[in-house]
Structure formats: C-alpha cells, structure tokens
Image 1 (cartoon, rainbow, N blue to C red):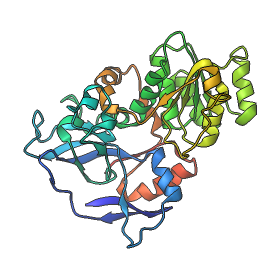
Image 2: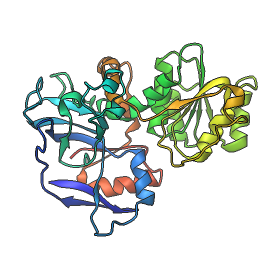
Image 3: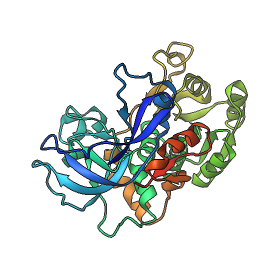
Image 4: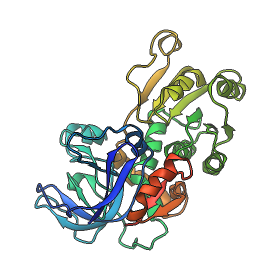
Amino acid sequence: MKANIMYAAGDVRVEEIPVPKIQKPTDAILKAVVACICGSDLHPYHSMHAHEHGEGEAMGHEVLGRIEEMGSEVSDFKKGDLVVVPFAYGDNTCPFCKEGLMTSCVNGGFMTGCQAEYVRVPQAQGSMFKLPDDIDEDSPLLPSLLTLSDVYGTGYHAAVMGGVNENTTVTVIGDGAVGLLAVLSAKKLGAKKIILMGRHKERTDLGVAFGATDVVPERGEEGIAKVRELTNGEGTHVVLECVGLMPAYEMSLEAVRAGGVISRVGVPQYVEAPVGFASLFGRNITLTGGPAPTRAYMEELLPDILDGTIEPGRVFDVTVDLDGVPEGYKAMDKREALKVLIRP
C-alpha cells in the first residue's frame, strides 16, 4: 500500500509498504477514506533529524475509514462500519478514560501512520467512533466529520478547559485550523466577544464566519495594545493559545485579564516559560489546556455537524491524493494551504 514516510526535516516521501496487520486482539484495521495533514506535522517537518540507520517515520494521526478487520477483543462493530478515530487512542475503560481524559489512558498512545491507504487502530474498541449508516464516501460531511479526530475536538477542548461561556470574553491566538475551530467552539459555548489574533486575511475571514467579533492582525506589543483597546484596557477573561510557540505564550500573558484563564492546546515547542509573580501568580491567572481527549467530545459535537448547524470542515482548503501529500506539506509550510485533506 501507499503511505507517507518522513525521513528528515523537509524530506517526506510516498512509498510502498506492507498493509498493516492485526498485532493484538484489541486492534482493528481500517481502509482510509479521508485523512489529512496537521499543523503539528509541520514541527517534525521543520526539525526532524535523519535517523542513524536511514529509517523513516510513518506520518499522520487523523483518519476516518471503514473497518476491514478486527481483533478478537473488538466487539459492537462490524466490517464495513464507517468510523472516525481520535488522534489519541485509549481503551475508554481505565480510570482516566472514565473521567474523559483519554489522552492519559493507561493503555493508550498516539495514532501514527494515518496518511496511508490502510491504518492499524490500537485499542479499537474504546477509540473508534461509529458514524451513522447513511454517511458514505461521497458525503459532503466527511471533511467536517474528520475534524472530530483532532482539530475541532482540540479547539473545543481549549474552550472547555478555559471555561468559556456567555459571560466570558475570549482571545484566540493563532489562525491555523485549531485556532479557527477554537473560535467556532467559543461561539458554540456562548461567548459574545471573540478576538482572533491572526494576520492571514483569508483565514481570519473564515474566523469571522465562525464567530470572531474582532480581528487583530498585529503581533507583539502592538497586538496586545489592540486587544486592550477592545477590552477597556483589561484584557479578556480567557485566552485560547493555539500555536505552541513562545511568542504566542508571551502574548497570552499580556492578553489575559486579572483572574483569567490561559488555555493552551498548541503543542508547546518550549520547555520553560514564565509562571512567576509577574506573569501568572500575581494576577491570579490560571494556566490550563493540554492534548485534547477528542473521543470524549465526539457524541456531543456530532449532531451539529449532521444537521448542518456548523461546518468545521471549511478549514480544509486543499485536497490531494496520497501521491500529492509531499506537495501538501510544502503548501502548508508556505502558508499556501490552511489544512490539506487527503483522499487515498
């Protein structure tokens, strides 16, 4: 089968590799229907060092597909079912899963190798989410349903962990797919004022369509001054940080009001960050967020997609087949694409 393999920074190749097999009785094999490239895939695309023996890493952690085969411990599904899989798999029965924190499952881990024709799903019983029988490969809903795997669930997690409601003002930092869907999520949770910090107009226009009331394209001190101007000099109750770079964290510290919450879902590309008196402690700022347990939100988010109330799949603006995946990486890296959909 064809699969996308990354060998080093900037070096991604579509190669023929064996179709995955059931390795444990808790596994399932899917035939991928749609997959995608994630903004977090660009981190290794920028920084991965070549492995000593020249082997590469199978890429991709978001997939929607049909069940081809199941291990002996997978039940309540049948071959041919269309399912979406969270980027973090889990058994959905351990103490953490029962609390909705599948990303900390004692038998869990993170999906890999989803940019391929076939995908192995560990802990399939607890991870796979069955979609309605009337959804097929030609459904226009597929891109939106795929966002349940990661980006919509991650944006929603940011807003939930931030405590967004009708009484909170919100700043979203980042106009990538997660940032835009954090806007959509804040709107869903009732926020009346949502400030989107982003400088790519075609993206921030989509953010406005998703519910942003204000757009601040400036960065750094100039951007913070604009946020303060829009909030009576106070900052917002909640900041949803959807980038993961230190400048975004530093802007979060300045954009949040005293007593507010910074919710981070951008994968941090730093180890140390200010948390002392001048940054968090002195102003009673709460720092929260983390990798999203997207499986925990799927039942809640599905109905609005099915009835057309929301369309998170609008974040996909380029579609490729597997052979086009390397060009898809280049397009996202150059900001020529917001998010690339893959149709194997």
